[in-house]
Image 1 (cartoon, rainbow, N blue to C red):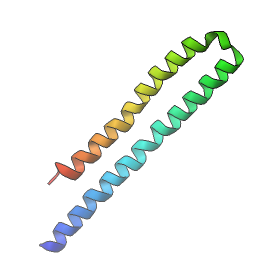
Image 2: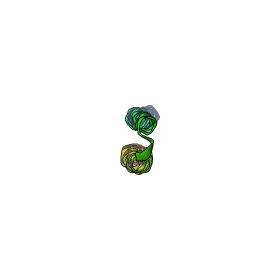
Image 3: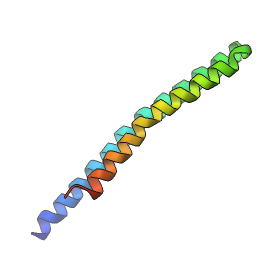
Length: 82
C-alpha cells in the first residue's frame, strides 16, 4: 500500500511540474515577443509610444492569465486530487 501511495504522489508531483513547465513557457515567450515588438514600434514612431505602451500592457496582462491558470491547475493537482 505504501508503494502505491508513493507512486501516486510521484505522479502528482510530475503532473504538476509538467503543467507549470509547459504552461509557463507560452506566456514567457509571448510577453517577451510583445515587449520586443512594442519597443521596436516606439523606436520607429515615438509619437505613438503612449498608445503602444497601453496596448502592450493589456496584451501582457491577458497573456499572463495562461500562466496563472497553469499555476491554478498545478495547485489543484497537488492539493485537491486524492
